[in-house]
Amino acid sequence: MSQIITRGKELIRISPKDNKKLEKSTNGGVSWITKFSGSSSVGEFQDLTDFGKEILATTSKGLFKSTNDGVSWIRKS
Image 1 (cartoon, rainbow, N blue to C red):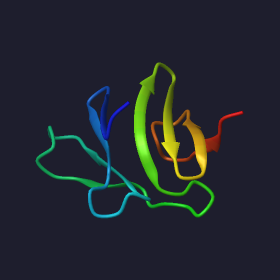
Image 2 (image 1 turned 45 degrees about the vertical axis):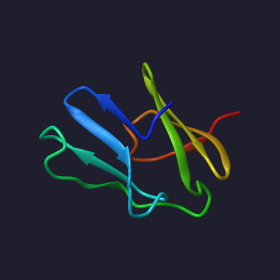
Image 3 (image 1 turned 60 degrees about the vertical axis):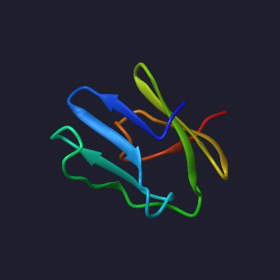
Image 4 (image 1 turned 90 degrees about the vertical axis):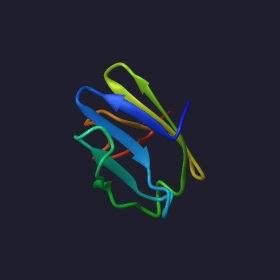
């Protein structure tokens, strides 16, 4: 797992300024915009991994998955 992953033409990373947020770049990391602005139910992101159709994230609240490239998150059961 890592702090940054590649999904198609996007880079997705845990924000270095606020680990409750995810950011995306479509220009190779030159600039970044917020992709997920955080949620008290998800907590702080620790690691990300590209798992095919899902993104998996280890957070301070457990293991979560996203099926829409990190826009929303659901606890993985």
